[in-house]
Length: 393
Image 1: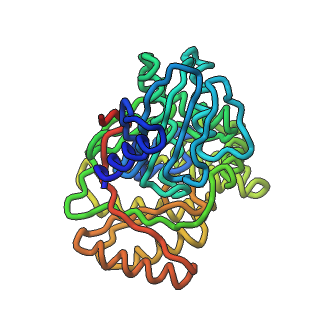
Image 2: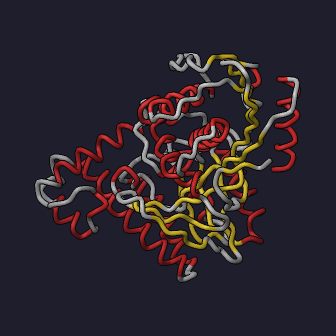
């Protein structure tokens, strides 16, 4: 599949622009194994880069013109802008990410001062919760810094990708998605402390089990979700808790510490305390999940995945009927050790740890129930954990 997409991309570039691209790149999507909505709460996350993602082909020009084409948005055709035409337009589709990347690069002292031709193709569903936006952002940042001859370190690239979301698009996302896309390694999960940016690569070895990604196919965009609302609720809860305990983030608390500090607020601030309970307990589950993987205790790891989903459903309330149907149906199938939503929720995708011989049966059973109850089909694939964004040709 990857080779076919590379060939399709090169051919698409030549067909639209009349010559072959100078370089080809691949940028993965990501799944978060566990640790949801902990990144902006000062906790730990545990993502991994996956083999579906975004491919890009680029060639520099001798003028200030930028011509772009995305095979995923063929109706947009070839879009032409200049290197100074960076203001966000209400009608922008994927090109808003290009404008955003060039804007944050210029603000950081890395302006893109010459034009280029660019073609994009991806095999990751948009609005899948697998971070297609971060995949594209880190792809564009790597392509443009290479073209301009900049030597931007990887962590700075990650922070620039986050700035596209936070400062250009106005979405208050954490740093996990861009970090996973940039720093991913083959068959490794990334155990990341979002307070310090210290990280550890942990072998994501599932033995006779496979990580099955189940996508709802529900149409949604993160910017249309309640993401910013949940972040504000978490910040409100932290401010209240700081009246009783000396902490800087929710990630600084253990569950017993939280319960003691929250006792004064459970009656009058029940909703935001539920949000905080998730952030605190999810951080502890993420730490435990790392230990379980290191001990090759897949049963415990699976139980933590399932507990994570329950917390996201009940305390943080970001799952919804589509994700709950996928997860609950998967958990009823033989050979499934655990399942949870992954990503921001409100649609998107879930993951399940499934005995490899049971993957076809689980896929069929979950697909049948979901289609009957939701009214349209989900999508499935087995995730391979791969390296981060890189040049491929």
